[in-house]
Image (cartoon, rainbow, N blue to C red):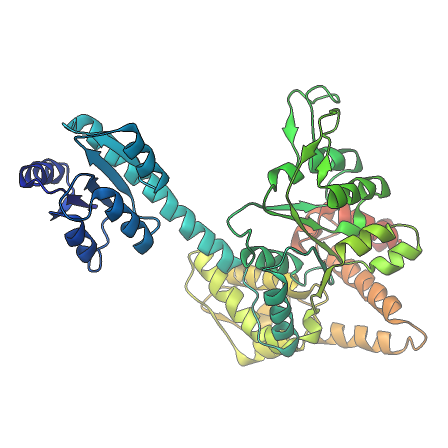
Length: 457
């Protein structure tokens, strides 16, 4: 039952409104002046306040100012028998939802009340959704590398500097980007994400900058691009290292001039966007190969942040496992499962080449597929490499004394992909879904590592 506080110095109006509103299934409170209203708000939090402007003592406008200072989201509808345009405008500027003249039309008043309460419900739902999203994207862990990363995020977030996040696939670069946005001055503005590796080359410019009607076949209407959508907020360019040189040049221009034109258009559009970019590539190496612009790298690399791989923060594995266990048990409506010490030992000792993303996907599958209330050692065999497989891989790597770190990483990634492809019977779609990788990206990896699917079958 919603509560409405009636503030009016005329007792007859208070009683009449209370009777009508209680007939409409509202709970009512009453105050005869502004002072009594403000005192009552220390004990009560009504869903809506009906506030008269002309009262003895402090008037309705001053009362509204003090209400807003106590609770900026409090819903207030102003009432007045001596209404003027200036008082209506002033009330609106101070955040009143509506302004209704006396003598009151009960039909109009009830409509305004119901509309205001609907808006209040939407605001509350939005707050709850935002809190849930922030919780879903929290950075879990208390290892030294993660504590250091969180400190850097705290320093970088409130500034306007552009950020370049580096790290392997699956380490949680998006979490860092969202943490920067959520702790910035732009937190109430849009957070817009673009996966540069997932968008076909012929669509990347239209996606980023938008297009005008008729600019290409199929462009039946004008379309705002991601830079437009992120105006006054944060644009997260994920996998920036996969962007073509042509698009890199246009992005550099926006970063320098804050202006662009849509595809097929000639109107210059100005935007205010904070760019956070991320990549799993070594951009300095890509620059030396001619694949990435040096000037764009220096423009983006104002505040560099590196997300450590899971193997460098092993003490976080168990807390991450428990976090994902609670998350997916709640999401799937299942009883919270327990994990045996033996199973936890396997999780802690596994190398996690897919990093936190692989651990997250593994726990999700275990929550869904494990019968009973306990996850034991035998349940892990279908989801991660068996201990002997990991040892074989480790021994194989140890024999390659001439390898560089880059060689070792690439060979391990190739071995990981081959094993996963084999696990899913060489099905590209199922494998990509299991390791949380775009199909197009998996195809590129298979081609880059010269994995012959026919021979492996």
